[in-house]
Length: 177
Image (tube, rainbow, N blue to C red; front, side, top):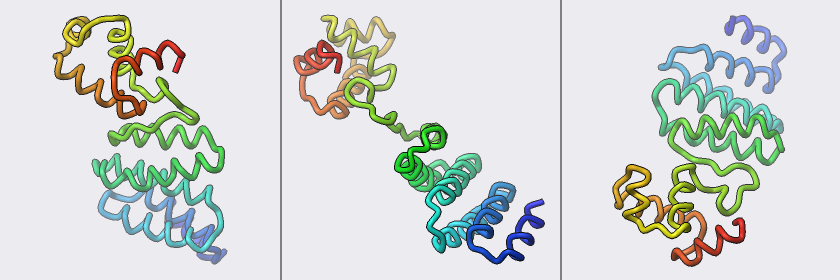
């Protein structure tokens, strides 16, 4: 099937058609051949102005790399796909790219996310307990975590929110942040 698609694309002789055919080949190829197929597709996309199709190829490539258990390698094309879909306003595709990135261990903030929206569910749980007046030890006990784990999450919260202490955190939560 992929070979026939490529033959038809070769008859057209257009880079956009060939790039899509090589993307299909990459999706259907064995793990050892996917870099060559997607590499060809990406180089053909470079000859066209179609950012959307380039992003679709990067998403397919990253997804395929992840499924081949190459999570680290998958991140770059997935990030490129995510950024392109965001620029294009293609929210469903951007969400798909963000989901694939999450599967590689990279968290992408939802479009337009600010403040507390940037936090993971666990970070939000910790923040709400701490702001409610619980100590680190009490928060850890309530969530069946160690105090060190609570402190670890709290450091990440401070970094994400650009704050440095619990007073600022309480103010942010109170303002609906």
